[in-house]
Length: 207
Length: 227
Image (cartoon, rainbow over all chains, first blue to last red; front, side):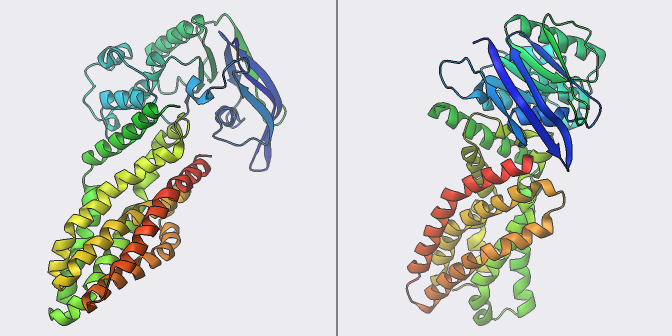
């Protein structure tokens, strides 16, 4: 099972405007697919369409085409959109443990995870009182404890400081080295060069 | 997916909602205070004579319950939608109707159950004759789950509309009318000394049907809303 995702001839229109058409790509284990494009080009729409949050006009998306058993693809991928998915009323540690419980992941040491993302000492503050970057860090802890092969990340570096971006790229490197794949959008240039980087440019209308 | 992971996700959704609500108790207390205010103002407005009050008691309590359900309905999925937890729910491998069911259960625990517990107090304030009390409690026990379930459908449909409050009320109110008619009819029958159980059983049937189907409707509405 080396191919994680194949997409064929994806086309999307939003508000009467063609965002992209005939977009095809394949994501293998170890790949990083960096989707580029100006604001409003349709990057987020593409990512949301991949996980089924948005309907496409046409095209075919197949997860894990090589998988022998027909298990649920939702088990095998992680999607993070613009919204962090963090409850403002709950503290960092509560958000973290509930999120892990929801995805059925076992976490050995929640405190260790918080220390990794640099939130130790803030664990009992309601997330609503933390900064946007700190909330983002809570959400990003998922990347440390989940063991799914495919990550789909929409602007993962948003609101993070340079240390945070560095930390996240180190995690990306570990993930791809372990055979995982990442599909992401980002306006930031990666300081880390993945061994197998694909770039996909969406230019509103003709991809 | 196996049953244990379904159950784990169900309880995780319930726990998260309950924990969030415990941090903002006013959201739960407001609708209940509203009901208590309506119920305590009515005797002042229509006069304390037990003959009038006793006859309108069940109607007043049920109308207050319906309006208070509408009052808090908009908030049911709003925060989840805004902070992205709703879209994460749709991406879980567990069936979405199950998770929607968890949210309905929590909503009932926080709005329906307190109402059932408050009902004797409301009945006392409105001087509902003693023979109607049990029936009133019974209609609230079987009727409030319908309120929670139908409210959840409306809230899920309108959550992406920004300010969908007025639309939501218009959408839900007609659906609550049968509930109101049968519930007050049951209490009236009890007061007249005739059998109230046909209406109560009918409500119970409606309740079961709604509880069975609503999670699927809510799930479909959520999928449309996060699109």
